[in-house]
Amino acid sequence: MKVKEYTVLMDCVERGITIGINRSHKYSDNPSDDEIKRALIDAVLLEICEYFDFKEDDE
Image 1 (cartoon, helix red, strand yellow):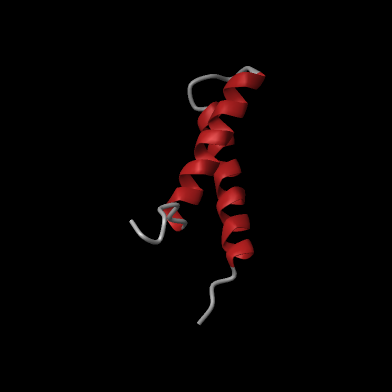
Image 2 (cartoon, rainbow, N blue to C red):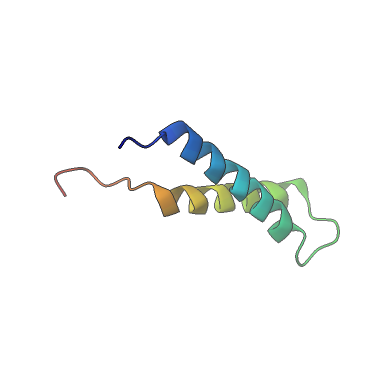
């Protein structure tokens, strides 16, 4: 069986964007652009790290 990495990665990005937007508006009705960007980046990277391991094979 082979994993379709692009499809999994795209799902992570889509979920991360949704989570990030929701988080950026959780405590502020009008978050700044920087707050939104930071929440998006954090959420997307967390989603990606849930499904991808970035350790070297020899570790």
